[in-house]
Image (tube, rainbow, N blue to C red; front, top):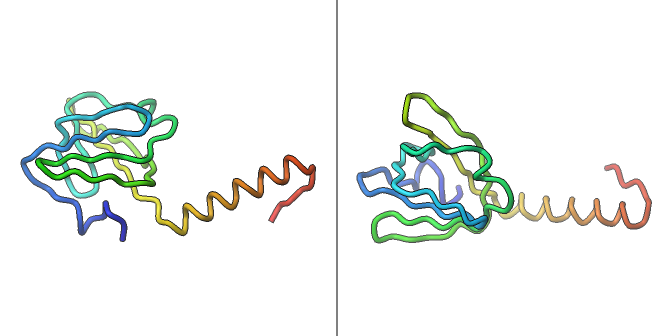
Length: 115
């Protein structure tokens, strides 16, 4: 399982701060299972561009996750926006890099590499 999975998330009173690689920061977040909860409006636009690595602060603990993706935003009640990020596993990162390189080779050589 990844660093941020249902067994490793810390629920509690201390708020989280999350900083994305694109410069967006979310403060005073609560955690409920796999979702972070904000009392400030969160939009998908805030997750555009490169979001990884993602820095987390929770109380005196800080950690960084190198490869993450945005999953969804929920707005279940007034003044609460729930969002979910997930860790991209190393084998998936390798697969994505390989696919990107194959697409580039196909484009540069004019050869159709549909696999």
